[in-house]
Image 1 (cartoon, one colour):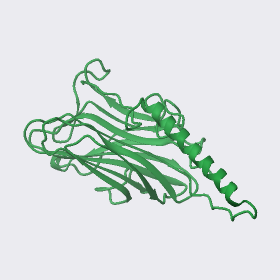
Image 2: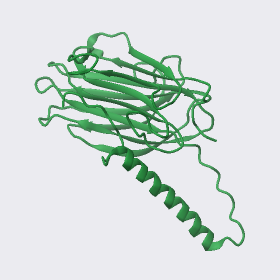
Image 3: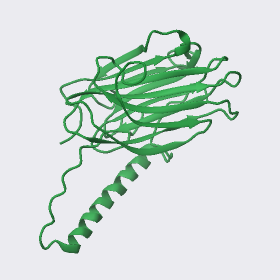
Image 4: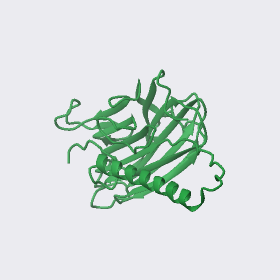
Length: 275
């Protein structure tokens, strides 16, 4: 049974942020986009910088945090116009930013992206690739904490400052460019669910204030299929055949990821501005 969102229903991707230093009452929604999962949908993004539709100015948030590009999207198994995803039978949810900088006084901003959809079956595994794609050469205490959370609360987001959600994974990247690959596990609310990918992006006061980039890519894999009882007479040849089939599937999947990633350590494909 596939975990793919039901084709008759639209998936929704919502982006928001929270900056405690700005005296905000809660998470502010930046944008929400709905549509079927296709190579062009749903994609929710903000692009700034020379030659972009939004002009040369960065997207300014909260107490002075800026970004040239923020994007959240649901990628079908075959990839979309920006990324090959992580492969497998089900969609990949990606959240990323680049050219991020902190205000001169320093601080922390929380960026949220939620994928809302429907599914059947539990529990799920979540193969995940996350990391940092940009970091200033001069260290200044820049830290990106990445989290993946699940919930089905009335609020558009799961996680801190919204009072709901279960953290199924977290990683921390400090003053370094690094990519980590993990497999998370969790139980999603059914049939309607929310998955939130969150960045806590912070830096110390003083120069430099940027550039920092980070990404999260996570895909859904079906609940494990019960293993049938051994068939009498199958013996060692049957085990060898089964093992060979699994190895072939894994090699084909890794080749697909390598092709869609263009040879990078991460399959993440990201539009970079101002570099």
